[in-house]
Length: 137
Image 1 (cartoon, rainbow, N blue to C red):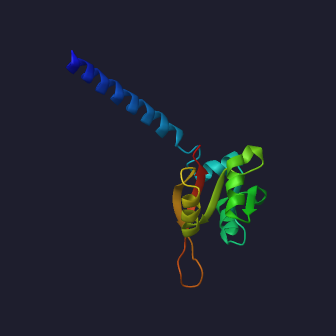
Image 2: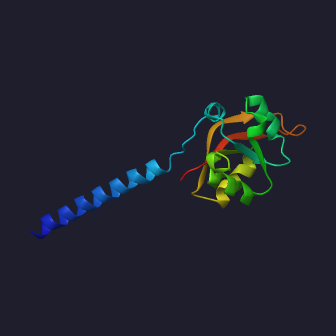
């Protein structure tokens, strides 16, 4: 009898762990996965002010009125948290090293998605621009 109780306990624990894992993974999927989807939906997108990325975003097809500059990481975080329909933005574009810092500062809340776009960069240094950073929750 004790052996069967132990087997039932292990099976129920395994089922509970599997179910909670599935629910958590579904929650962490980004709602936007493509730049063209952002353009088609007319979503507001952002970038760090003072960056060359605004010109690249307009070349990609974004409407100039839908591109929002952010002065700080905290301002970017607040705008993405609001979302495009609530006066914020749906995604943030940025240079790879800065995006990694942003994601690490707000770990668990954002992820980088989409393709990587290569640019000429500054002088002889080649920089990489990440596609999209999108809120996970």
